[in-house]
Length: 281
Image: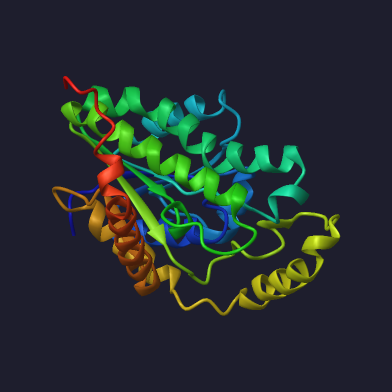
């Protein structure tokens, strides 16, 4: 077992967050598991000497600091922050209500922003720590329908973590983005997915097909979240965690395809792209 660490996991009342908490506890670490209702954590994980359940709504900027303070009061430090809480606002952009689009950004972009902001003073004081953020392959490539809001939030969190990394590295703090493909979590359940109300005839046929496809995929995804959780605990223990971790064979394929597309796009108009400098530059 690696050195005992204190993990702080958001969205740990169900889904992947439960699996990560279980894997960390099995590995001998202490876990602060947060959810909008901490009772859901207790129901999912039971009682454990090294487990603290805390109420936390990640969309509330004022709620994160007390949760971090409770962590330090109980365990004395914070070593691994896992920004995991998520949701899925699914639908075509034109049909999605503005407040639902904003809700997606609040949860899966500003949620990690709020919690990371609260955790950094403690990590900086320790001169150590890992900020692990669960992104998605939709943060690498937004392929398919119904992904505008979700992909916007995930592309945003990718940029946030990539930009944060060099700012905090001098203090011994590392960042790690996790881009899962399709895992058999609860993301596609009615508790996590909200579909936009159909309202535009031009989209009607595709809406019917896409909703059926998403609902049909629920519970049949190929990825095993328990295996992913074990991999994340393993990676958190290495000296230099990866900046990005492609989680699943489908995620590796997405990374490779996106890299190829970017190279092709860079080359497609290379002459024009490289001709835009001042003549005296």
